[in-house]
Length: 149
Image 1 (cartoon, rainbow, N blue to C red):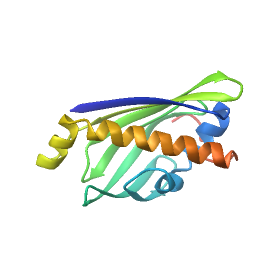
Image 2: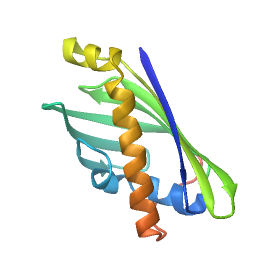
Image 3: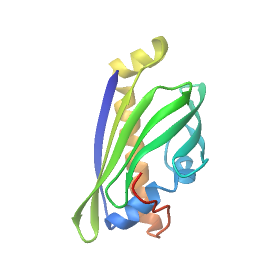
């Protein structure tokens, strides 16, 4: 297993950052390679991705969800084996630190090379930067404030 961990400061309150992150269907708007995310039920999401020319589909289960604090997941079916957590830490009333930690099992030569040379870390960094731009430009509330899972 490999791990990537990246953080970014966003210029919105923690509630807005968390609410936007939990609108999983918007992930294709800021996550490179994510084609579609469907919220199947309260804890199950279905993902369709195309990264590095490779199409993948998988299901991920939300294993923990604490409003304004964290969302954790683990894949339960499909082409990818990963788990992770995104945490939200208020810096002050109008700024939030978003930290994404993901554990994954690279599959095949291309993914192992990408992992070895830091391409996956840079990919996650880019996704977080796009999330920052997306949420700061949008600045609106929305999202699923599910109870603790």
